[in-house]
Length: 210
Image (cartoon, rainbow, N blue to C red):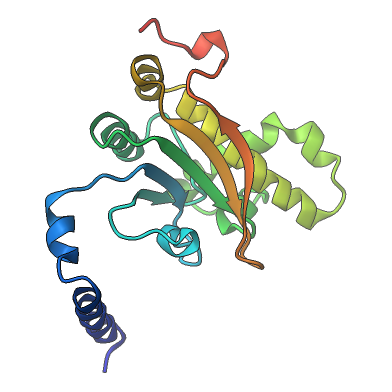
Protein backbone atom coordinates (compact mmCIF):
# COMPACT_ATOMS: atom_id res chain seq x y z
CA UNK A 1 0.00 0.00 0.00
CA UNK A 2 1.32 3.44 -0.93
CA UNK A 3 1.71 6.12 1.72
CA UNK A 4 -0.92 8.38 0.16
CA UNK A 5 -3.46 5.53 -0.05
CA UNK A 6 -2.97 4.99 3.67
CA UNK A 7 -4.06 8.61 4.18
CA UNK A 8 -7.24 7.98 2.21
CA UNK A 9 -8.03 4.89 4.28
CA UNK A 10 -7.41 6.82 7.50
CA UNK A 11 -9.78 9.51 6.24
CA UNK A 12 -12.56 6.99 5.67
CA UNK A 13 -12.05 5.52 9.13
CA UNK A 14 -12.12 9.00 10.69
CA UNK A 15 -15.31 10.00 8.85
CA UNK A 16 -17.00 6.75 9.88
CA UNK A 17 -16.03 7.30 13.51
CA UNK A 18 -17.37 10.87 13.50
CA UNK A 19 -20.76 9.76 12.19
CA UNK A 20 -20.96 6.93 14.70
CA UNK A 21 -20.39 9.40 17.55
CA UNK A 22 -22.52 12.20 16.08
CA UNK A 23 -24.76 11.35 13.09
CA UNK A 24 -25.35 15.07 12.31
CA UNK A 25 -21.66 16.04 12.48
CA UNK A 26 -21.03 16.59 8.77
CA UNK A 27 -24.47 17.97 7.93
CA UNK A 28 -23.93 20.69 10.56
CA UNK A 29 -20.48 21.57 9.28
CA UNK A 30 -21.68 21.69 5.68
CA UNK A 31 -24.18 24.45 6.41
CA UNK A 32 -22.40 26.77 8.83
CA UNK A 33 -18.94 27.91 9.92
CA UNK A 34 -18.74 30.05 13.05
CA UNK A 35 -15.20 29.91 14.45
CA UNK A 36 -14.21 32.37 17.16
CA UNK A 37 -10.51 32.09 16.37
CA UNK A 38 -8.18 32.79 13.47
CA UNK A 39 -4.88 30.96 13.84
CA UNK A 40 -1.82 32.22 11.96
CA UNK A 41 0.79 29.56 12.47
CA UNK A 42 3.90 27.99 11.02
CA UNK A 43 3.68 25.43 8.22
CA UNK A 44 5.79 23.04 10.32
CA UNK A 45 4.02 19.66 10.37
CA UNK A 46 4.74 19.28 14.10
CA UNK A 47 2.46 22.20 15.01
CA UNK A 48 -1.13 21.33 14.00
CA UNK A 49 -3.45 24.03 15.34
CA UNK A 50 -6.41 21.76 16.10
CA UNK A 51 -4.38 19.05 17.82
CA UNK A 52 -2.43 21.28 20.18
CA UNK A 53 -5.48 23.35 21.15
CA UNK A 54 -8.01 20.53 21.34
CA UNK A 55 -10.33 22.28 18.89
CA UNK A 56 -12.77 20.55 16.56
CA UNK A 57 -13.57 21.19 12.88
CA UNK A 58 -15.49 24.46 12.59
CA UNK A 59 -13.96 26.00 15.73
CA UNK A 60 -10.71 27.50 14.40
CA UNK A 61 -9.94 29.17 11.06
CA UNK A 62 -6.33 28.51 10.02
CA UNK A 63 -3.64 30.13 7.91
CA UNK A 64 -0.09 28.76 7.91
CA UNK A 65 3.17 29.82 6.33
CA UNK A 66 6.89 29.49 7.02
CA UNK A 67 7.64 31.08 10.40
CA UNK A 68 4.08 32.43 10.88
CA UNK A 69 4.74 35.77 9.19
CA UNK A 70 2.28 38.63 8.74
CA UNK A 71 3.54 40.55 5.72
CA UNK A 72 1.67 43.63 4.53
CA UNK A 73 2.06 42.66 0.85
CA UNK A 74 0.95 39.04 1.30
CA UNK A 75 -2.45 39.00 -0.43
CA UNK A 76 -3.00 35.37 0.55
CA UNK A 77 -2.66 36.11 4.26
CA UNK A 78 -4.55 39.41 4.12
CA UNK A 79 -7.49 37.81 2.30
CA UNK A 80 -7.68 35.20 5.08
CA UNK A 81 -7.56 37.91 7.75
CA UNK A 82 -10.19 39.99 5.94
CA UNK A 83 -12.54 37.04 5.53
CA UNK A 84 -12.07 35.89 9.13
CA UNK A 85 -12.58 39.36 10.61
CA UNK A 86 -15.18 40.85 8.27
CA UNK A 87 -17.31 37.84 7.40
CA UNK A 88 -16.68 35.17 10.05
CA UNK A 89 -16.40 37.89 12.69
CA UNK A 90 -13.78 36.09 14.76
CA UNK A 91 -13.20 37.41 18.25
CA UNK A 92 -9.55 36.39 18.54
CA UNK A 93 -6.55 36.17 16.23
CA UNK A 94 -3.63 34.06 17.40
CA UNK A 95 -0.17 34.28 15.89
CA UNK A 96 1.57 31.13 17.07
CA UNK A 97 5.25 30.48 16.53
CA UNK A 98 7.22 27.57 17.92
CA UNK A 99 10.59 26.99 19.47
CA UNK A 100 12.90 25.14 17.11
CA UNK A 101 11.45 26.90 14.07
CA UNK A 102 13.56 26.11 11.01
CA UNK A 103 12.62 29.35 9.29
CA UNK A 104 13.75 31.49 12.20
CA UNK A 105 16.96 29.48 12.57
CA UNK A 106 17.73 29.85 8.86
CA UNK A 107 17.22 33.60 9.09
CA UNK A 108 19.88 33.79 11.81
CA UNK A 109 22.52 32.59 9.34
CA UNK A 110 24.16 34.22 6.32
CA UNK A 111 23.50 31.20 4.13
CA UNK A 112 22.12 31.81 0.62
CA UNK A 113 18.86 29.86 0.34
CA UNK A 114 18.21 31.20 -3.18
CA UNK A 115 15.94 34.02 -4.20
CA UNK A 116 12.41 33.15 -3.03
CA UNK A 117 13.36 31.79 0.39
CA UNK A 118 15.90 34.57 0.90
CA UNK A 119 13.13 37.08 0.22
CA UNK A 120 10.83 35.42 2.76
CA UNK A 121 13.49 35.04 5.46
CA UNK A 122 14.46 38.70 5.05
CA UNK A 123 11.35 39.55 7.08
CA UNK A 124 12.74 37.61 10.04
CA UNK A 125 16.17 39.16 9.59
CA UNK A 126 14.47 42.55 9.90
CA UNK A 127 13.01 41.45 13.24
CA UNK A 128 16.52 40.48 14.39
CA UNK A 129 17.88 43.83 13.24
CA UNK A 130 15.12 45.66 15.12
CA UNK A 131 16.00 43.86 18.35
CA UNK A 132 19.71 43.26 17.75
CA UNK A 133 20.87 44.97 20.96
CA UNK A 134 18.83 42.59 23.11
CA UNK A 135 19.57 39.54 20.99
CA UNK A 136 23.31 40.12 20.63
CA UNK A 137 23.56 40.42 24.42
CA UNK A 138 22.37 36.80 24.78
CA UNK A 139 25.54 34.68 24.72
CA UNK A 140 23.86 31.28 24.60
CA UNK A 141 22.97 30.60 20.96
CA UNK A 142 19.97 28.39 21.76
CA UNK A 143 18.52 31.01 24.12
CA UNK A 144 19.09 33.70 21.50
CA UNK A 145 17.27 31.52 18.97
CA UNK A 146 14.33 31.02 21.34
CA UNK A 147 14.13 34.73 22.05
CA UNK A 148 14.05 35.57 18.34
CA UNK A 149 11.16 33.13 17.95
CA UNK A 150 9.29 35.09 20.64
CA UNK A 151 10.17 38.51 19.24
CA UNK A 152 9.15 37.39 15.77
CA UNK A 153 5.70 36.53 17.11
CA UNK A 154 5.43 39.92 18.83
CA UNK A 155 6.30 41.76 15.62
CA UNK A 156 3.79 39.77 13.57
CA UNK A 157 1.03 40.66 16.03
CA UNK A 158 2.03 44.30 15.66
CA UNK A 159 1.88 43.94 11.88
CA UNK A 160 -1.72 42.78 12.24
CA UNK A 161 -2.59 45.81 14.35
CA UNK A 162 -1.21 48.08 11.63
CA UNK A 163 -3.69 46.83 9.02
CA UNK A 164 -6.87 48.72 8.18
CA UNK A 165 -8.73 45.40 8.44
CA UNK A 166 -8.03 45.13 12.15
CA UNK A 167 -8.41 48.82 12.86
CA UNK A 168 -11.85 48.96 11.20
CA UNK A 169 -13.05 45.99 13.27
CA UNK A 170 -11.64 47.54 16.43
CA UNK A 171 -13.45 50.81 15.77
CA UNK A 172 -16.80 49.35 14.71
CA UNK A 173 -17.06 46.23 16.82
CA UNK A 174 -14.37 46.32 19.54
CA UNK A 175 -12.80 43.08 18.27
CA UNK A 176 -10.71 41.00 17.63
CA UNK A 177 -8.24 40.57 20.45
CA UNK A 178 -4.75 39.76 19.18
CA UNK A 179 -2.57 37.12 20.82
CA UNK A 180 1.06 36.11 20.37
CA UNK A 181 1.87 32.56 21.45
CA UNK A 182 4.84 30.23 21.19
CA UNK A 183 4.49 26.44 21.18
CA UNK A 184 7.13 24.21 22.74
CA UNK A 185 8.04 21.18 20.64
CA UNK A 186 9.78 19.59 23.63
CA UNK A 187 6.86 19.73 26.06
CA UNK A 188 3.76 20.50 23.95
CA UNK A 189 2.94 23.60 26.02
CA UNK A 190 1.86 26.94 24.53
CA UNK A 191 3.45 30.03 26.08
CA UNK A 192 1.62 33.38 25.70
CA UNK A 193 4.21 36.09 25.00
CA UNK A 194 2.19 39.09 23.81
CA UNK A 195 -1.36 40.41 23.69
CA UNK A 196 -3.20 43.39 22.25
CA UNK A 197 -6.73 44.24 23.31
CA UNK A 198 -9.09 45.77 20.77
CA UNK A 199 -8.34 49.48 20.25
CA UNK A 200 -4.89 49.14 21.75
CA UNK A 201 -2.66 52.15 21.22
CA UNK A 202 -0.13 51.77 18.43
CA UNK A 203 2.23 54.19 16.73
CA UNK A 204 -0.04 56.94 15.29
CA UNK A 205 1.96 56.79 12.06
CA UNK A 206 0.32 53.43 11.33
CA UNK A 207 -3.24 54.35 12.24
CA UNK A 208 -5.88 55.09 9.60
CA UNK A 209 -8.42 57.92 9.70
CA UNK A 210 -11.35 55.51 9.56
